[in-house]
Length: 273
Image (cartoon, rainbow, N blue to C red; front, side, top):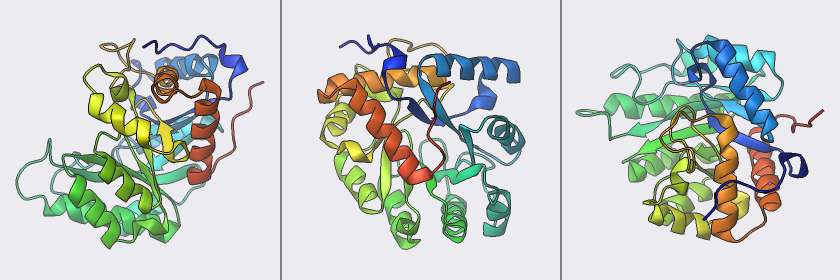
């Protein structure tokens, strides 16, 4: 299966990279801005730059402030600052500004965190409460924690705001449960991996109006860039792979995943030129 699109980027609707970490691209801000330029040349118009802690938030906000089609999130990743529970007010106060479209990434991670994880659950719940307080969607990280992630989302009434299950790698039933709560399912470069047959089967079955594409750059570069640092331009390979996997036109994948993003998160659609 060929992942690279043969269609010129100018002939397709602009894509959205729904999850990237721009401050981690390149050795400095200039390197990250060069990656943004390459993304635009590849037909990627809008970027959601995702925070993983409060210390890195100023750099995330600098990108969002400098470019109207780069948006920010506010949150603390479940693997950051183990044992620390951030209060609802600490999260909400940082997320009030207009350039912040969402709360996260937040969630549960049982792969890297060990022992008593009550703090992780409490932190996750506070992120959801901050999102409901502000009326902003959530960016959810879930690893080896599918049942508890859905349980907490239900108990905290996360369906009031919805959001996205970022870098989704779970089963079809988990996807359905998340969609029932108003969440989109975002597919990263993992779906292009030769070994990801179960995820590919899920990606075939899900309704297109519930899908997003992302890079999670600088991590998880898709085929044919696997093994190299990822960057937002490579979300085109994820979209191209999905078009072939689902036997749909690349134009429809671009247009629908972009429309899905703006329906969930808001923001003005990108217009080139």
